[in-house]
Structures are given as structure tokens and as C-alpha cells.
Image 1: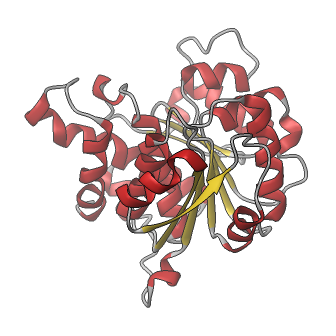
Image 2: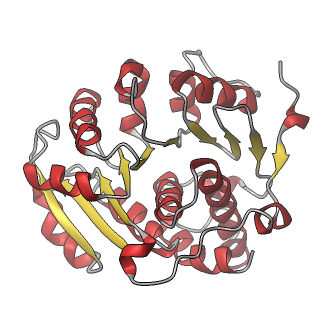
Length: 285
């Protein structure tokens, strides 16, 4: 079993030596993020991920959600372009595929609620995307991948997976992950040829591994994973590579929680409050 000591600890010093790209110019130079998710019952997941992507520095934001929630989401996030998904999410409209073809980053999964429909939607969206478009898979997109690893087979797009503990066990085809989160992250990274960010552990398919030690119990709150996925997407849009985006995002997510704890206690803050800390946390590294 690999030794946990093989993981580099993510610290401000490590991140300062691995600086994020800081492009100049207009919003297009900071990349376009397309987030695809949001069923009728959970449109807030897309809102959290989308605003987190903007707070992380993405230049443009596009959201795809079920038609019944599209209008209200466009009002809640006036910075974003919002397109409608049909009630059967596996039926990808042309407007969505056109956005996918132009996006720099596509995040799939937040707020979706059907594995089979998510798998069909993922196939169509990734087929439409450019070979260099970065991809973040979260929530039900990970459920779809765990049932069919062929969904990523033969693709050249750089991919970051952001599973929770339950999703990680399914991706690794284990009954549970036990205490070896680092080993599970490594196994998933190798299996899917993707960067994996799992509960403070980041693993790349080339064998590099990191761990972030600032995360606390308060991050285990509804919507927190959507925020984390959005931060990853925003950093990818700025030009970070997949491993760099995952490490920086994991740090920003954890330290944003630390910043909220004095006001709300270790477990009293909300995911939407994490979002408001992200930009400052990144700037202060």
C-alpha cells in the first residue's frame, strides 16, 4: 500500500510556488464555464457551482438547467447565460450542444437526479465539446461513470472527478473506502485516467498525490460539494491544469470554511456562504 507520506501537503507555500495563471485582457481570456445540471427539485446546485466558478476567476458563465427552473435561475444569477434542458435530461437541445462546442470548461452533474439520463446527456455534451475542453464530473455524473467507465474511454479532454465518500467507493468498485482515502483516490485516478479530488486528497493519473489538511467537519454540509466543483471549474477556466486546479480548489474550499468558523461555529455555516469567501481566500495565498 502506498505510504501517505508520499503525498505532498498543500500549503500556501506550495501554492505560491505553483501560481495560478493570471490572464490579462477581456472576460474571454479568463475562460467560459458551462455547468450542466439542475433538475426541477435541485436547481440550487447549479447556482452554487456557477457562482463559485465566477468567484474563482472564470470570465463567463453559462448554465443549463431544467426548463421549469431556467427563468428563476437567470434572475438569481444575472451574470450567467441560462439555457433550458428538457424534462428528459438525456435529450440534449441544440442550444446546449452549441455552448458545449465553445466552452473552455464543462462541469456536469450538480443537481441532476437520474443516472441513465445523466449518462446519455454526458455522452452528447462531451461528444460536442472540443478535445481540449476541460471537464469536471460531480454528483450524478460520477454515478453514471461508476456504472459505465466507457463514458470517458478514448477521450482526450482533461478530467477532474470530485466524488464524495459514497461516490468514491462506487468509482473504485469497493464496498467502502475505509480509512485509506489517499489509496482510493489513487486507484480512481489510475482507473479513469483523471485527476481526483476526494475529501482533501488529490491524485493525478501520473502518480502525483497531495493532501490538504485544513478541512473541517463544517464542510460536510448540503451544497458544499457543488461549491468545490465550481471552484475547480473556475480555476480550469483561468488556465490551470487539472491537478493544479484540484489542489488550489481543495485548499480554497477548506480555508473558506476556516474563515467562516469564527462567525458561525465549526458546523453552522452554509454552502452559499463558502462561495463568498472564495475570492478572498485565493487572493490571500
